[in-house]
Image 1 (cartoon, helix red, strand yellow):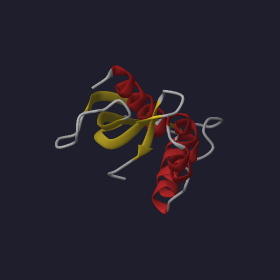
Image 2 (cartoon, one colour):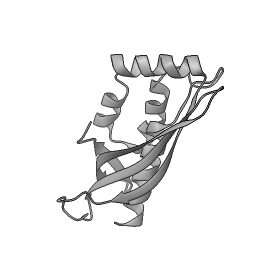
Image 3 (tube, one colour):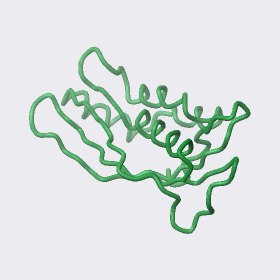
Image 4 (tube, one colour):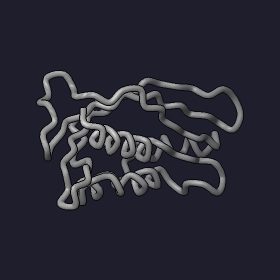
Length: 134
């Protein structure tokens, strides 16, 4: 896995999964998607900011708990069966531990993963262009 591809994938996942539902912080679930837009193609950016009923419910729970949601990346690799990265396209699976820390009570963690397709932009940077599992 080329380091610049892995770095782009890590940055996207950390921005996309991080939420801060404490007072005065994020105003909605979509704030994370807006932060992640810096790491994605224009087409994917439009999809990321589309709110679903599930994300609205999740945001309500986190807001009530005044939770901070963080991710810790554990692995970035080529998914089983995917082609090796080329000079302009890469398939990546990012595994991470998502931790929800409420204002009161114990934090909870889950192990998560997401598949990403990345492409090199005209400027030479790697951008996430698709979330094949989502």
